[in-house]
Amino acid sequence: MVQWVKRGHSKGEIDRSGEMLIPWWTDPNPKLDDGQFQAYKVVENWRTSHGLPLNVVQAVLRSRAQRVELNVIVAQRLKRFSSIMNKLVREPRMKLSQMHDLGGCRAILSDVQAVRTLFEMYRGQPVLLNDETSLKCYDYITNPKDDGYRGIHVVARYHPRRESRAPWDGQRIEIQLRTKLQHAFATAVETVTTFTKEPLKFGAGPAEWRRFFSLMGSALGVRERTPLVNGTPQNEPELTAELRKSVRELKVRQRLRRWAQAVRTLPRRNVTDFKWLLLVLDTEKNTIQVTGFTDRRQASREIAKIEPSTNKNLDAVLVSVSSIKQLRAAYPNYYADTTAFLEALNVALQ
Image (cartoon, rainbow, N blue to C red; front, side, top):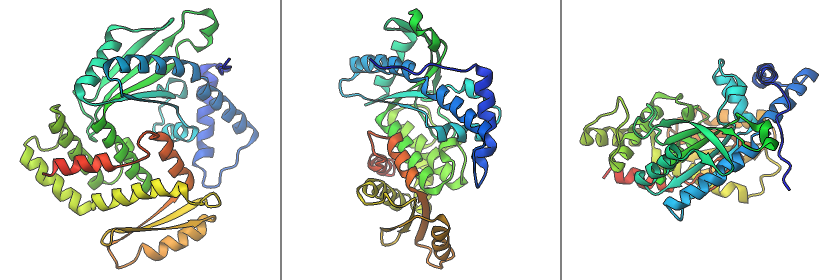
């Protein structure tokens, strides 16, 4: 029998612990003192205590999704500690006890109609097995985000009927409902975020990449016959023309193909002794060279030799081995494969 972790601290303690860890997390040379170590244990307890509600919500999602589509993809995850801390740094007003996506699951379906059919099951049938939830819904298909993201999010607050599950009462779990095209878009954003080290996933980063994904979000909206992203051309020929220009200037195809190749092949290599990987992409020859390092300073010296290069076709990126593993963990079913996204891009540019 699974021994589920229970919340062991008050919400005030949880919030204070999250705040206490921020200076340590942002320190270039972090070292936990005794107080911060205790705070870390509080945060880890709160994170892992979402396991039971997540398991219940995921099981119901899978059951309902399979009634809509037999071959639906369903995945779940507890938010990583690093992701929690990064979110607290990005959003200073965020209280850790109010973070609604410490537990998350998603269903990936074939088309928008299937997503909406599953969504209606949640709006019309809130009961979950022997427990129930209260729901808060965000429809990013009808109202796509400015960064191009589309999908439906349902935040479920867990309310157990059995007294034995009372310690988990009120915990939130996020449910994401996406089409395959919408998930391909999210996978591509995650891949570019990892390799450029820019916060594109969070609506920030270089303007040219943000514009590309906004345009691509609209292009997928055209294909799925859903509303387009605000601020992008609403006329299809104009949208296609600007998207084509953006793809050419950013060399999107070359970068995505080789970054995805790196994600697929690196775990098969003997990189266990490395902490940092230097990837040098030649966008003209369409090749990628990978070198492993144990010392970040040495890796930084090597990338410094390349970055001032007059060869504009070279694109050097330094990534941590752990970030590659995290990318795989975030997208286990797609393995950061941007093939589907590139295929959708080709269709959009026809």
